[in-house]
Length: 477
Image 1 (cartoon, rainbow, N blue to C red):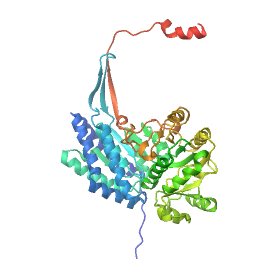
Image 2: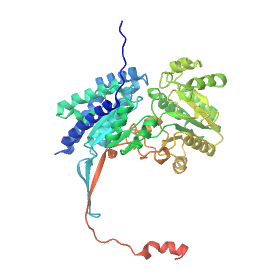
Image 3: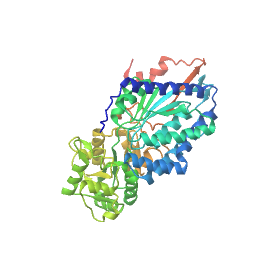
Image 4: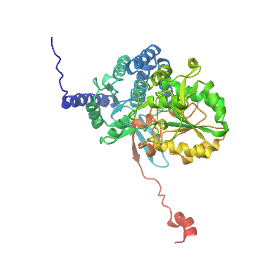
């Protein structure tokens, strides 16, 4: 009988692996940029996109993602992979990312697009295919090389995606080293080394990774925590709101950071709306059943991994709850009892569970939603179902949020949709409210530098009197 001996991994060996990847990426990127044309960058982006959007590969990768991570469902991942990739291709089509992109005679400034270099992308297990593909396409469109750092659960499917990208590269004569990944086993040492040696970091996923990226010394784009809160007011089309909320909440078993987590319903229409929500597949739990679900979902201050992003039958089984008409149940809801650390139901749940609060009127709903976002999810987004557009603008003026989603299925709308103007993305910047460097959806403009050629223009110096005249009229000199 032999006994296996565990060998400690030498951190220096792990760092050397990453250093080799970065060196190869730098060489590939330099060759990619030398003598480049917009067509070369566009072709590379399309090659990476076709590696995923090709239907048979998409289906295979979606199934593999669910099998290896245990998160989400295959049908919706196929849809997500296709929709996010196609939407991104729409956004970048015709975009100038090479050479002179603006020449302004009035300002005397010529702007030239320049690659950043080597992008390091840390990607989550919730979207182990769509997110890396999105990052790769954006990076190549702007002339960069990219190295992916997948989650441990997502490494296998990321490697398969990488193989398909390289196969497409072979068709058009591109270097495999333009797109690489940290090899398994994934470790914090390897991820940290990538953070320290890349030219730009793009981090989607755990807030721990985002904080590490910001403190790495490398320019970083991180995204904040989600905890989508949606108000349903007394003017809303209740049936439409319920159907959209259900569709969004259930998509890919709520893996999206843009899935609804908290509903705030105005008292006047509360009962009528809850009836519509039930018709859309929602099942409200009360009393002991709600307590059982809450206790099962939050264990030791963390979400129960046996319930996160699982089918509704699994969620109910683990929680030990039962509902009426279970065969038509799509998600569960519990009443909100409070807000803050002592009430975990007020935070992000990443599962087919909603928390519902009841508010006296719209003003009370707005105040309650602000408290929820102050607890978790500040900067990310808020939704409202209403026919009073002024209320949506009011939220935009007052709430700590970068996005107000109006009368839409939230998870489809926040990251870009074919019927709204947001850029397609799987990474939503949350601005200063969420501790992020960007307040926009991550998109191709974040993947390039611009050089400005600056010339003289006719002197444009105002008189002091012209600037201060209005102020002096009010305050005096």
